[in-house]
Length: 280
Ligand code: KMH
Ligand code: ZN
Image (cartoon, rainbow, N blue to C red; front, side, top):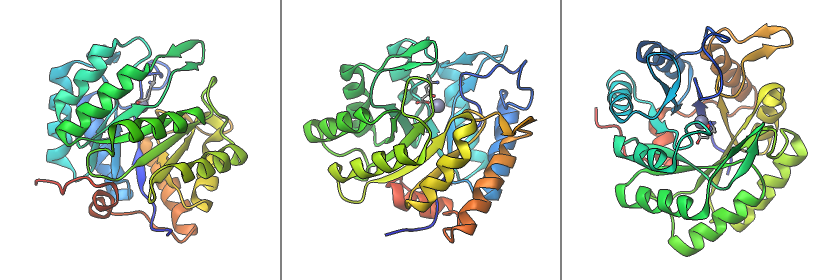
């Protein structure tokens, strides 16, 4: 059944350089301000990558813990840490992200070419992430960059059981050079492949770069949810750089309202995803 729209903001990512994209939130203060404003606009989940003092991507454990605590203090957002990190991050550091105790963490379901790089996600690594999240009550968001990743997810759940919280939620990340394209036919194919996953599986979608708007519209019309943010798009329209993550969230909220599927509150999002209530 179609519900309201879960809106996730992915404000930073690991790919864009602050020097080239000055509006990118990279300090804790910038991230907190972004989080509060995006929550006020209608976001319910924040997908977090952090940066070091030089604005370079980092998985520093102290910074991750500080970030999780500060986001919980300042907002009711569901805090989802990226376990994907940057393509250069070692597996051990990516697994250790879970030690920072987020509500959710991403779990990419396979290896792919990522532009000129390789985003490595070996089967044994995926199993480690999934089972550790089960043990610790961290709810995964399975990142699906290509159709075969859904087959891998079906295999994972068949062998190792449902995730923490019992609900399966996937995010179609579309338009990465090396993954599925950010098009309506690709989204329809991915949506249809959800048939083979547990009943009630939900999906969000995000389109990289110029595929943002087509993917957003296709996802809404197929009953899906939305992820937006400067991790995925730094151009608002042809020749117009994104001014802030809030601009992208506001646009997503507008589309969701037009589709008569208004944004879910953080409490509704927790219920949908099986994330325990905020302890504030
Ligand atoms: N930065 C990409 C290599 C995730 O956050 O889990 C991986 C990524 C996926 O962004
Ligand atoms: Zn990410």
